[in-house]
Image 1 (tube, rainbow, N blue to C red):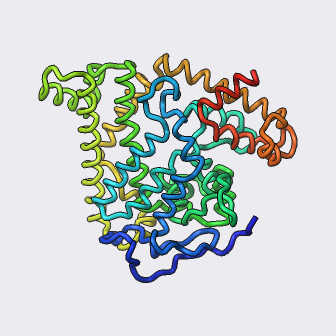
Image 2 (cartoon, rainbow, N blue to C red; image 1 turned 135 degrees about the vertical axis):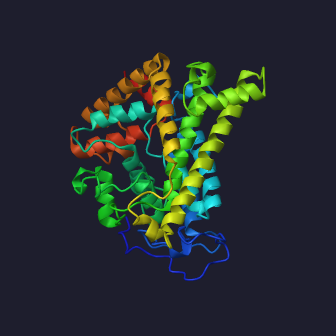
Image 3 (cartoon, helix red, strand yellow; image 1 turned 60 degrees about the vertical axis):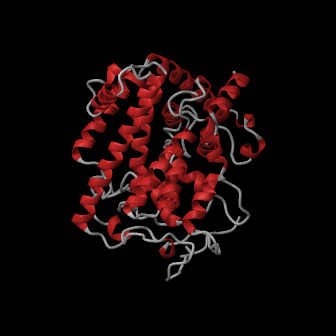
Length: 405
Protein backbone atom coordinates (compact mmCIF):
# COMPACT_ATOMS: atom_id res chain seq x y z
CA UNK A 1 0.00 0.00 0.00
CA UNK A 2 1.46 3.32 -1.05
CA UNK A 3 1.93 5.81 1.77
CA UNK A 4 0.19 9.19 1.60
CA UNK A 5 2.11 11.91 -0.13
CA UNK A 6 1.87 15.58 0.68
CA UNK A 7 -1.44 16.87 -0.77
CA UNK A 8 -0.83 17.69 -4.40
CA UNK A 9 -2.45 20.93 -5.61
CA UNK A 10 -3.37 21.09 -9.25
CA UNK A 11 -1.24 24.20 -9.46
CA UNK A 12 -2.47 25.68 -12.74
CA UNK A 13 -2.75 29.45 -12.73
CA UNK A 14 -4.68 29.94 -15.98
CA UNK A 15 -8.04 28.57 -17.05
CA UNK A 16 -7.48 25.38 -19.13
CA UNK A 17 -9.46 24.90 -22.33
CA UNK A 18 -11.59 22.07 -20.91
CA UNK A 19 -12.69 24.09 -17.86
CA UNK A 20 -16.19 25.58 -17.58
CA UNK A 21 -16.46 29.23 -18.60
CA UNK A 22 -18.12 32.01 -16.68
CA UNK A 23 -17.64 30.76 -13.14
CA UNK A 24 -18.60 33.26 -10.45
CA UNK A 25 -15.85 34.61 -8.14
CA UNK A 26 -17.27 32.55 -5.25
CA UNK A 27 -17.34 29.27 -7.23
CA UNK A 28 -14.77 26.51 -6.78
CA UNK A 29 -12.25 26.77 -9.61
CA UNK A 30 -10.75 23.41 -10.59
CA UNK A 31 -7.41 25.03 -11.39
CA UNK A 32 -7.29 26.33 -7.80
CA UNK A 33 -8.04 22.94 -6.24
CA UNK A 34 -6.14 22.03 -3.09
CA UNK A 35 -5.37 18.71 -4.70
CA UNK A 36 -5.56 15.07 -3.67
CA UNK A 37 -4.15 13.14 -0.73
CA UNK A 38 -2.12 10.99 -3.13
CA UNK A 39 -0.29 12.88 -5.86
CA UNK A 40 -1.56 12.13 -9.36
CA UNK A 41 -0.88 13.61 -12.76
CA UNK A 42 -3.99 15.51 -13.79
CA UNK A 43 -5.82 14.62 -17.00
CA UNK A 44 -5.43 16.80 -20.08
CA UNK A 45 -9.06 16.43 -21.16
CA UNK A 46 -10.99 16.44 -17.85
CA UNK A 47 -10.92 18.77 -14.89
CA UNK A 48 -10.20 17.42 -11.37
CA UNK A 49 -13.89 17.70 -10.45
CA UNK A 50 -14.99 15.93 -13.62
CA UNK A 51 -12.66 13.08 -12.71
CA UNK A 52 -14.12 13.01 -9.19
CA UNK A 53 -17.62 12.69 -10.62
CA UNK A 54 -16.53 9.95 -13.01
CA UNK A 55 -14.83 7.98 -10.24
CA UNK A 56 -17.98 8.09 -8.14
CA UNK A 57 -20.13 6.87 -11.05
CA UNK A 58 -17.77 3.98 -11.78
CA UNK A 59 -17.50 2.88 -8.14
CA UNK A 60 -18.98 -0.34 -6.81
CA UNK A 61 -20.74 1.55 -4.01
CA UNK A 62 -22.58 3.71 -6.55
CA UNK A 63 -23.87 0.66 -8.47
CA UNK A 64 -25.16 -0.86 -5.25
CA UNK A 65 -27.45 2.13 -4.72
CA UNK A 66 -29.72 0.60 -7.37
CA UNK A 67 -30.93 -1.92 -4.81
CA UNK A 68 -30.86 0.19 -1.65
CA UNK A 69 -33.99 1.59 -0.08
CA UNK A 70 -35.08 5.19 -0.33
CA UNK A 71 -38.32 4.55 1.58
CA UNK A 72 -39.70 1.34 0.08
CA UNK A 73 -37.68 -1.89 0.02
CA UNK A 74 -36.56 -2.71 -3.51
CA UNK A 75 -39.03 -5.53 -4.21
CA UNK A 76 -42.16 -3.57 -3.26
CA UNK A 77 -42.49 -1.91 -6.67
CA UNK A 78 -40.47 -1.17 -9.78
CA UNK A 79 -41.28 2.54 -9.90
CA UNK A 80 -40.47 3.68 -6.37
CA UNK A 81 -37.27 5.60 -5.74
CA UNK A 82 -34.11 3.79 -4.79
CA UNK A 83 -30.96 5.48 -3.51
CA UNK A 84 -29.64 5.41 -7.08
CA UNK A 85 -32.61 7.12 -8.75
CA UNK A 86 -32.77 9.58 -5.86
CA UNK A 87 -29.08 10.46 -6.30
CA UNK A 88 -29.60 11.06 -10.02
CA UNK A 89 -32.54 13.35 -9.28
CA UNK A 90 -30.51 15.28 -6.70
CA UNK A 91 -27.75 15.64 -9.29
CA UNK A 92 -30.14 17.09 -11.87
CA UNK A 93 -31.47 19.68 -9.41
CA UNK A 94 -27.96 20.56 -8.21
CA UNK A 95 -26.72 21.13 -11.76
CA UNK A 96 -29.70 23.37 -12.56
CA UNK A 97 -29.12 25.52 -9.48
CA UNK A 98 -25.36 25.64 -9.96
CA UNK A 99 -25.68 26.80 -13.54
CA UNK A 100 -27.98 29.64 -12.53
CA UNK A 101 -25.59 30.79 -9.80
CA UNK A 102 -22.38 30.52 -11.82
CA UNK A 103 -21.09 27.63 -9.71
CA UNK A 104 -19.04 24.63 -10.75
CA UNK A 105 -21.61 22.13 -12.01
CA UNK A 106 -19.13 19.24 -12.06
CA UNK A 107 -18.30 19.58 -8.38
CA UNK A 108 -21.97 19.96 -7.42
CA UNK A 109 -22.79 16.87 -9.49
CA UNK A 110 -19.99 14.82 -7.92
CA UNK A 111 -21.24 15.71 -4.44
CA UNK A 112 -24.86 14.97 -5.32
CA UNK A 113 -23.97 11.56 -6.73
CA UNK A 114 -21.74 10.67 -3.77
CA UNK A 115 -23.90 11.92 -0.90
CA UNK A 116 -25.73 8.64 -0.22
CA UNK A 117 -22.94 6.12 -0.81
CA UNK A 118 -22.63 5.38 2.92
CA UNK A 119 -26.24 4.39 3.47
CA UNK A 120 -26.96 0.92 4.79
CA UNK A 121 -29.53 -1.45 3.30
CA UNK A 122 -33.10 -0.56 4.30
CA UNK A 123 -32.41 3.16 4.54
CA UNK A 124 -32.56 4.95 7.87
CA UNK A 125 -33.97 1.85 9.59
CA UNK A 126 -30.81 -0.07 8.73
CA UNK A 127 -28.61 2.82 9.85
CA UNK A 128 -30.43 3.07 13.19
CA UNK A 129 -30.00 -0.65 13.81
CA UNK A 130 -26.33 -0.66 12.83
CA UNK A 131 -25.63 2.39 14.99
CA UNK A 132 -27.14 0.53 17.95
CA UNK A 133 -24.95 -2.50 17.25
CA UNK A 134 -21.87 -0.25 17.09
CA UNK A 135 -22.66 1.90 20.15
CA UNK A 136 -19.66 0.52 22.08
CA UNK A 137 -17.33 0.75 19.06
CA UNK A 138 -17.68 4.33 17.87
CA UNK A 139 -21.20 4.12 16.47
CA UNK A 140 -22.26 4.27 12.84
CA UNK A 141 -23.04 7.36 10.76
CA UNK A 142 -23.90 7.18 7.06
CA UNK A 143 -22.13 10.46 6.28
CA UNK A 144 -18.92 9.23 7.90
CA UNK A 145 -19.38 5.92 6.09
CA UNK A 146 -19.52 7.78 2.78
CA UNK A 147 -16.12 9.29 3.60
CA UNK A 148 -14.84 5.85 4.57
CA UNK A 149 -15.97 4.41 1.23
CA UNK A 150 -14.39 7.25 -0.74
CA UNK A 151 -11.07 7.12 1.12
CA UNK A 152 -10.62 3.49 2.11
CA UNK A 153 -13.21 0.85 1.19
CA UNK A 154 -13.31 1.28 -2.58
CA UNK A 155 -10.26 -0.68 -3.72
CA UNK A 156 -9.86 -0.17 -7.45
CA UNK A 157 -6.54 1.58 -7.97
CA UNK A 158 -3.01 0.22 -7.75
CA UNK A 159 -1.48 3.19 -5.91
CA UNK A 160 -4.03 3.86 -3.18
CA UNK A 161 -7.20 2.75 -1.43
CA UNK A 162 -10.36 4.75 -1.98
CA UNK A 163 -11.05 7.03 -4.95
CA UNK A 164 -8.50 9.73 -4.06
CA UNK A 165 -10.96 12.56 -4.68
CA UNK A 166 -9.99 16.20 -4.47
CA UNK A 167 -10.01 18.08 -1.18
CA UNK A 168 -13.05 20.06 -2.34
CA UNK A 169 -15.10 16.92 -2.98
CA UNK A 170 -14.18 15.32 0.33
CA UNK A 171 -14.82 18.57 2.19
CA UNK A 172 -18.23 18.79 0.55
CA UNK A 173 -19.17 15.25 1.50
CA UNK A 174 -18.25 15.79 5.15
CA UNK A 175 -19.49 19.37 5.66
CA UNK A 176 -22.42 19.76 3.26
CA UNK A 177 -24.74 20.30 6.24
CA UNK A 178 -22.43 22.87 7.84
CA UNK A 179 -19.37 22.96 10.13
CA UNK A 180 -18.77 19.94 12.32
CA UNK A 181 -16.84 21.79 15.02
CA UNK A 182 -16.98 25.21 16.68
CA UNK A 183 -19.71 27.82 16.82
CA UNK A 184 -22.85 26.28 18.29
CA UNK A 185 -21.26 22.83 17.97
CA UNK A 186 -18.74 21.19 20.28
CA UNK A 187 -15.07 21.95 19.71
CA UNK A 188 -14.12 18.43 20.78
CA UNK A 189 -13.16 16.46 17.67
CA UNK A 190 -13.24 13.22 19.67
CA UNK A 191 -17.04 13.47 19.64
CA UNK A 192 -17.15 13.18 15.85
CA UNK A 193 -17.49 9.83 14.07
CA UNK A 194 -14.22 7.94 14.12
CA UNK A 195 -13.79 7.76 10.31
CA UNK A 196 -13.92 11.56 10.12
CA UNK A 197 -11.48 11.96 13.02
CA UNK A 198 -9.00 9.56 11.45
CA UNK A 199 -9.10 10.97 7.94
CA UNK A 200 -8.91 14.56 9.12
CA UNK A 201 -5.53 13.80 10.68
CA UNK A 202 -4.22 12.91 7.22
CA UNK A 203 -6.00 15.56 5.17
CA UNK A 204 -7.32 18.54 7.13
CA UNK A 205 -10.87 19.29 5.94
CA UNK A 206 -11.17 22.43 8.10
CA UNK A 207 -14.09 21.14 10.13
CA UNK A 208 -14.85 24.50 11.77
CA UNK A 209 -15.80 26.23 8.51
CA UNK A 210 -18.70 25.89 6.10
CA UNK A 211 -18.29 23.98 2.86
CA UNK A 212 -18.33 25.49 -0.62
CA UNK A 213 -21.40 26.88 -2.36
CA UNK A 214 -21.45 23.73 -4.48
CA UNK A 215 -21.71 21.53 -1.39
CA UNK A 216 -24.44 23.71 0.07
CA UNK A 217 -26.35 23.45 -3.21
CA UNK A 218 -26.03 19.65 -3.18
CA UNK A 219 -27.38 19.50 0.38
CA UNK A 220 -30.49 21.57 -0.37
CA UNK A 221 -31.02 19.78 -3.69
CA UNK A 222 -31.23 16.61 -1.61
CA UNK A 223 -33.96 18.23 0.50
CA UNK A 224 -35.91 19.34 -2.56
CA UNK A 225 -35.64 15.93 -4.20
CA UNK A 226 -36.60 13.69 -1.34
CA UNK A 227 -39.43 15.86 -0.05
CA UNK A 228 -41.14 16.05 -3.41
CA UNK A 229 -40.41 12.55 -4.54
CA UNK A 230 -41.63 11.13 -1.25
CA UNK A 231 -44.91 12.94 -1.94
CA UNK A 232 -44.94 11.23 -5.34
CA UNK A 233 -44.09 7.75 -4.00
CA UNK A 234 -46.42 8.07 -1.00
CA UNK A 235 -49.38 9.05 -3.19
CA UNK A 236 -48.70 6.33 -5.74
CA UNK A 237 -48.38 3.75 -2.94
CA UNK A 238 -51.73 4.79 -1.51
CA UNK A 239 -50.29 5.78 1.87
CA UNK A 240 -52.22 9.05 1.64
CA UNK A 241 -54.38 10.85 -0.94
CA UNK A 242 -54.09 14.28 -2.59
CA UNK A 243 -56.94 15.59 -0.44
CA UNK A 244 -54.94 14.67 2.69
CA UNK A 245 -52.38 17.29 1.63
CA UNK A 246 -54.94 20.10 1.52
CA UNK A 247 -53.83 21.64 4.83
CA UNK A 248 -50.10 21.33 4.16
CA UNK A 249 -48.73 24.82 3.35
CA UNK A 250 -47.49 25.28 -0.20
CA UNK A 251 -48.31 21.67 -1.16
CA UNK A 252 -52.07 21.85 -0.67
CA UNK A 253 -52.48 25.08 -2.67
CA UNK A 254 -50.40 23.69 -5.55
CA UNK A 255 -52.56 20.55 -5.80
CA UNK A 256 -55.68 22.74 -5.64
CA UNK A 257 -54.31 25.02 -8.39
CA UNK A 258 -53.53 22.09 -10.71
CA UNK A 259 -56.94 20.53 -10.02
CA UNK A 260 -58.72 23.79 -10.82
CA UNK A 261 -56.71 24.36 -13.99
CA UNK A 262 -57.29 20.83 -15.30
CA UNK A 263 -60.70 19.59 -14.03
CA UNK A 264 -61.04 15.81 -14.16
CA UNK A 265 -57.32 15.28 -14.73
CA UNK A 266 -56.36 11.66 -14.11
CA UNK A 267 -54.62 11.13 -10.78
CA UNK A 268 -51.20 10.13 -12.09
CA UNK A 269 -50.97 13.29 -14.18
CA UNK A 270 -52.23 15.42 -11.30
CA UNK A 271 -49.47 14.06 -9.08
CA UNK A 272 -46.76 14.65 -11.67
CA UNK A 273 -47.92 18.18 -12.48
CA UNK A 274 -48.10 19.11 -8.80
CA UNK A 275 -44.70 17.63 -7.93
CA UNK A 276 -42.90 19.34 -10.79
CA UNK A 277 -44.54 22.63 -9.85
CA UNK A 278 -43.41 22.19 -6.24
CA UNK A 279 -39.84 21.47 -7.32
CA UNK A 280 -39.87 24.58 -9.50
CA UNK A 281 -41.18 26.74 -6.65
CA UNK A 282 -38.57 25.45 -4.19
CA UNK A 283 -35.72 25.89 -6.66
CA UNK A 284 -36.93 29.40 -7.49
CA UNK A 285 -37.10 30.33 -3.81
CA UNK A 286 -33.61 28.97 -3.16
CA UNK A 287 -32.19 30.93 -6.09
CA UNK A 288 -33.85 34.17 -4.96
CA UNK A 289 -32.71 33.85 -1.34
CA UNK A 290 -29.18 32.80 -2.31
CA UNK A 291 -28.84 35.73 -4.70
CA UNK A 292 -30.02 38.04 -1.93
CA UNK A 293 -27.34 36.68 0.41
CA UNK A 294 -24.68 36.88 -2.29
CA UNK A 295 -25.57 40.52 -2.89
CA UNK A 296 -25.41 41.20 0.85
CA UNK A 297 -22.06 39.53 1.51
CA UNK A 298 -20.39 39.74 -1.93
CA UNK A 299 -17.91 36.90 -1.37
CA UNK A 300 -14.94 37.20 -3.70
CA UNK A 301 -13.76 33.60 -3.46
CA UNK A 302 -14.76 30.09 -2.44
CA UNK A 303 -12.78 30.53 0.78
CA UNK A 304 -14.75 33.69 1.57
CA UNK A 305 -17.92 31.57 1.38
CA UNK A 306 -16.41 29.04 3.76
CA UNK A 307 -15.65 31.68 6.37
CA UNK A 308 -18.84 33.75 6.28
CA UNK A 309 -20.09 32.13 9.47
CA UNK A 310 -23.48 31.34 7.94
CA UNK A 311 -24.79 29.45 4.90
CA UNK A 312 -24.97 31.43 1.69
CA UNK A 313 -27.17 28.92 -0.14
CA UNK A 314 -30.55 28.81 1.58
CA UNK A 315 -34.33 28.88 1.40
CA UNK A 316 -36.24 31.95 2.49
CA UNK A 317 -37.71 31.92 5.99
CA UNK A 318 -41.16 31.26 4.56
CA UNK A 319 -39.94 28.29 2.49
CA UNK A 320 -38.09 26.89 5.51
CA UNK A 321 -41.40 26.89 7.38
CA UNK A 322 -43.13 25.18 4.45
CA UNK A 323 -40.31 22.62 4.40
CA UNK A 324 -40.76 21.83 8.10
CA UNK A 325 -44.52 21.47 7.70
CA UNK A 326 -44.10 19.05 4.79
CA UNK A 327 -41.52 16.99 6.67
CA UNK A 328 -43.89 16.75 9.65
CA UNK A 329 -46.68 15.52 7.38
CA UNK A 330 -44.47 12.94 5.67
CA UNK A 331 -43.10 11.71 9.01
CA UNK A 332 -46.58 11.07 10.34
CA UNK A 333 -48.38 9.86 7.23
CA UNK A 334 -45.60 8.09 5.34
CA UNK A 335 -42.53 7.18 7.36
CA UNK A 336 -44.69 6.00 10.27
CA UNK A 337 -47.37 4.39 8.12
CA UNK A 338 -47.95 0.81 9.27
CA UNK A 339 -46.94 -0.64 5.87
CA UNK A 340 -43.59 1.13 6.06
CA UNK A 341 -43.13 0.50 9.80
CA UNK A 342 -43.79 -3.21 9.32
CA UNK A 343 -40.97 -3.50 6.83
CA UNK A 344 -38.56 -1.27 8.75
CA UNK A 345 -39.12 -3.37 11.87
CA UNK A 346 -38.13 -6.47 9.92
CA UNK A 347 -35.17 -4.61 8.43
CA UNK A 348 -33.80 -3.72 11.87
CA UNK A 349 -34.04 -7.36 12.97
CA UNK A 350 -32.16 -8.48 9.85
CA UNK A 351 -29.32 -6.00 10.45
CA UNK A 352 -29.05 -6.81 14.17
CA UNK A 353 -29.07 -10.56 13.52
CA UNK A 354 -26.41 -10.36 10.84
CA UNK A 355 -24.18 -8.10 12.94
CA UNK A 356 -24.40 -10.40 15.94
CA UNK A 357 -23.61 -13.48 13.84
CA UNK A 358 -20.57 -12.01 12.09
CA UNK A 359 -19.30 -10.31 15.25
CA UNK A 360 -19.42 -13.52 17.28
CA UNK A 361 -18.30 -15.74 14.41
CA UNK A 362 -16.21 -13.76 11.91
CA UNK A 363 -15.46 -17.05 10.16
CA UNK A 364 -18.91 -16.63 8.56
CA UNK A 365 -17.59 -13.62 6.62
CA UNK A 366 -16.23 -14.04 3.07
CA UNK A 367 -12.45 -14.71 3.11
CA UNK A 368 -11.44 -11.23 1.97
CA UNK A 369 -13.47 -9.68 4.79
CA UNK A 370 -12.37 -12.23 7.37
CA UNK A 371 -8.74 -11.30 6.59
CA UNK A 372 -9.44 -7.75 7.82
CA UNK A 373 -10.68 -8.88 11.26
CA UNK A 374 -8.61 -9.78 14.32
CA UNK A 375 -10.82 -12.24 16.17
CA UNK A 376 -14.34 -12.47 17.52
CA UNK A 377 -15.71 -9.64 19.63
CA UNK A 378 -12.99 -7.03 19.03
CA UNK A 379 -13.48 -3.35 18.11
CA UNK A 380 -11.64 -3.86 14.82
CA UNK A 381 -13.88 -6.76 13.90
CA UNK A 382 -16.95 -4.70 14.80
CA UNK A 383 -15.92 -2.00 12.32
CA UNK A 384 -15.20 -4.56 9.59
CA UNK A 385 -18.61 -6.17 10.15
CA UNK A 386 -20.27 -2.74 10.01
CA UNK A 387 -18.47 -2.00 6.72
CA UNK A 388 -19.60 -5.34 5.30
CA UNK A 389 -23.25 -4.95 6.30
CA UNK A 390 -23.41 -1.28 5.27
CA UNK A 391 -22.29 -2.27 1.78
CA UNK A 392 -25.09 -4.80 1.33
CA UNK A 393 -28.07 -4.16 -0.89
CA UNK A 394 -31.54 -4.82 0.51
CA UNK A 395 -31.87 -8.07 -1.41
CA UNK A 396 -28.44 -9.39 -0.45
CA UNK A 397 -29.07 -8.67 3.24
CA UNK A 398 -32.40 -10.50 3.12
CA UNK A 399 -30.85 -13.49 1.34
CA UNK A 400 -27.92 -13.66 3.77
CA UNK A 401 -30.33 -13.54 6.70
CA UNK A 402 -32.40 -16.34 5.21
CA UNK A 403 -29.32 -18.48 4.66
CA UNK A 404 -28.01 -18.06 8.21
CA UNK A 405 -31.23 -17.98 10.21
